[in-house]
Amino acid sequence: MNYRSTRDVSVNVTSAKAISQGLSSEGGLFVPENLPKLTEEKIKAMCEMSYAERAYEVFRLFLTDFTDDEIRHCVNSAYSDKNFATENIAEISHLLTGTYILELWHGPTCAFKDMALQILPYLLTCSAKKTISDKKISILVATSGDTGKAALEGFKDVEGTSITVFYPEDGVSVMQKRQMTTQEGSNVNVCAVVGNFDDCQNGVKAIFTDENMIAELEKANTVFSSANSINWGRLAPQIIYYVSSYVQLLKDGELNFGDKLNVVVPTGNFGNILAAFYAKQMGIPIGKLICASNANNILTDFINTGIYDRNRPFYTTVSPSMDILISSNLERLLYHLTGEDDKLINEWFGKLKTEGKYEVNDNVKASLKEFFYAGCCDDKQTKDTIKKVFDEYSYLMDTHTAVAYKVYEDYKAATGDTTKTLIASTANPYKFGYAVYEALGEDATDIDEFELIGRLEKLTGTTCPKALSDTKDKEIRFTGSVEAKDMSKVVIEFINK
Ligand SMILES: *Cc1c(COP(=O)(O)O)cnc(C)c1O
Image (cartoon, rainbow, N blue to C red):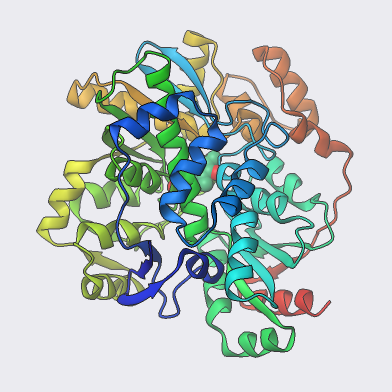
């Protein structure tokens, strides 16, 4: 299995190269040249397997240049109960008949990013050995909050690597900031940026292709790589929990083989929902892919009209991990929906760069409608949903999951579709404690973040994960903040330290 670039189909590289490089040199994203199929027999056989074993079965189809031992080492190191608070790794909660919550936040940083970032360092160091053996790897991350912490936890003290994380100064939750600025490890660096997530992401992309930087790197015998979901090594692990969920529901007797399962995903950079699309293309009987957005509803508009237009206000919301106007992984979807037409992708993404806007053709519009449903909700609706679900089911959702739940309710009302449905729950509610506490009708003004944890526990009878409450006693190690234009200086300084 080799990998192409969305902007140049003549590019043809191994998975090790795609993962160690992150982004193709002409700016395209790496995509598998075809999507391997999982047969009915294989899917059924997976019922008796652990999460790590299911992961192995999926990875061996995509990482054909890895040895079996290498893949086993990666999956066993990442998906063990040492790193995850639940043996199932991805836990399914049954909210009501036919509606399942896929809890993807039982990893060390309490957000779904752990599902991929616990394994990425293993995939990356293994890939690097095959491709750039003597060089050090410098990971650059732009984060809207959760990726940063998950990447730091994944890469801390991993030999031959170092990691720099940039986050928007006022764009992350109090707990997210605390998690990142208290990060331990000898190879980590964290810096705030005066700007929003898109500024961070653009800054990182610019550093990747900056001539000066490349010269500095040569001197330090280092190469850049990315832990953002533009990296195939981030995306592939996300396919696994959709495969595993279907298998688990089959095993639990909730589904018969072939029954459709809708999937609802609270979406930002389009990585998570794209992984569900890939699982469907591989033969998992997934029905509608329901794309849920917050007030930054550029994807809702795009899926409904075929016009992607970023010329619009940017909102800071209570679901900050979805406060994004440029969803990078959409490029991969469009590459597939156009029948791998790199010319169209160049045309559209060129327009996005120059005019901030593009419109897809009628074929793609029809495919978008066929595969997806899209909806959005604002902060008030998000909070109302948290309260309503808690009152009705005693189930406490975070703000992102609540967006997904609300859009799913709208979907059911609009379509009458009663297909069984899996809602991706992307973060533990304590990561966004203030908003969740307020959603339950309480006043959070002037309450210290740890006092808040105690109150939320008392109010809801739930327990804050230790990984979050423990940050209280940790030293704040990173206090720096820079203008977006100065991000490269931070990187150079750190590399030469
Ligand atoms: C990253 C994130 C999202 C968005 O996921 P994408 O793959 O970027 O679409 C949603 N919710 C939470 C909690 C996240 O951390």
